[in-house]
Image 1 (cartoon, rainbow, N blue to C red):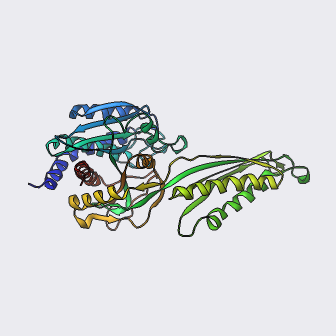
Image 2: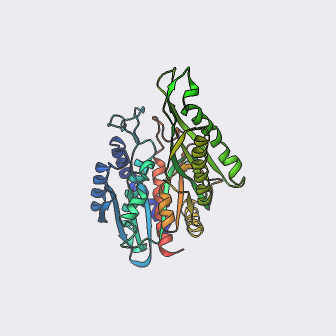
Image 3: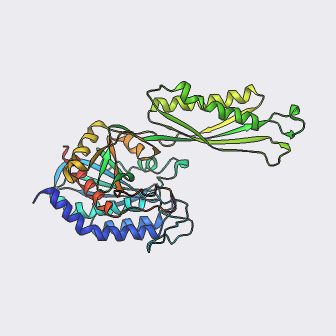
Length: 398
């Protein structure tokens, strides 16, 4: 019996257990940084399987260590756990039981897959070279605080044993069910929010010459921000500057004291990321100054670009083809503009990030971050098979 068949059979045997866990987590979604019930479930299931468990990583983070029978590398596998502040509109029997919260990005599936990987690998330790560290991460969705990955790293999750390589995976609606994709280089964007507070001088709308109008200043800033990419970024590179909030004033006949602009920057290269940051700050401050006001810029470097290591990419690409068949591997054409704090792991150790398809032929799945989001649970088995195979191959250094 081949190792591939062994993995597939083990995953098929475990799949009802994995699905039950996913549904239990889905019924009980928890916001970023408050994943206490999810943490307790993960710890309990890992201990039932005999996995070494450690906690104390950014509050609710968990690691599980599985040691193989032969020497090899330590491979980290990341699974995020948090949900979103959103009222679920689905009516399935496992819908969220928590008002205003739901798993609308598949992290319930990711966590269940992590436990499925633990179950399968605990039965394959004779074939496992090296060590696998399962990383269950809180607060992936909390970009405002910088996400949970960097704080788990700060708290030592990549140490004892020291992680040599990592793999992350995300359920992905743009790939067909049964397929897995990745690419070399940039895989997902850096995501950096900004808040610009424009300060002027308020007064009566009929006497604008006695005021410094922050709404007018803010409108000039918003317009000028559109030049950041078109006139500063190399056309062979990519970046996006988007303003999502422009607030100012409380009455039609009053020029206010302040106005607020909020937006986000997406980029795929660290140099471009820093260039855009500097230009956004300069445009805001200098435009406001030229028009008689001032601007305070709160520019937060949160999630860096997620860049796949070429060596790890090559191994996981081969692992997908070996486990699922070459026809199920998808070479992703371009990076996704969304942010993902797995990027911090990818900066710390050589890593690769994978997309796990769940789109059925002829169907248009609901996109993540939607109150009707769901995914085909058959994808969970594909994801577990892929992650197990990657762990085995990376542990051997293949």
